Length: 226
View 1 (cartoon, rainbow, N blue to C red):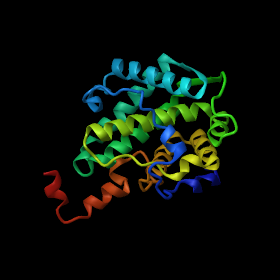
View 2: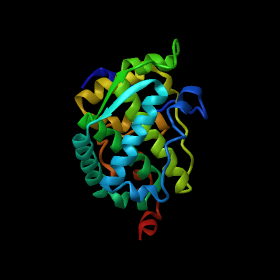
View 3: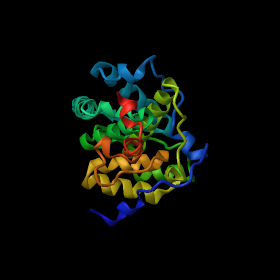
């Protein structure tokens, strides 16, 4: 695994920062009870395709979603998180963050988005540099951040606050390099985007996440899940 994996770390929160706030797209609507509706393939297809198109248009890109790969990514994601849903009894918010990171992992695994440059709308900015370097990664990550923010709001949980990593082109390059070797590393990188403590050793195992393990270590953990 490349040495660039050292970049997976949570840095100072920025609430909000100019670039990070633009990774989240307010014009992507979430239906009521989205956290459950999105677990249907038809709903996921529609929402993901519309979301990708919105994010791409905003950046001056043209995006194409591979429908077959989208279905494969959805099935991979839903199987992985459904098998670990009991973790939500310990820390619901962290489990939702984990689900968003796992979605990004599945999107990277299947490479379901192809992006072409039409006319980028942020000339001379750091955002343009990032988009040019990895447009597919930008679009997929923006989608996952947007959905995560909306779900946290719907569930009445602590709001999303992205970190300064979103501004760091080196961090994004490290994300791309590491995920090319192991898409599962999208999960700890995503955690570092949103200020959660990453689990680098078993990133796809919810029970091994630091926040959830911390609940297990509390004296009333069994009362919490009982």
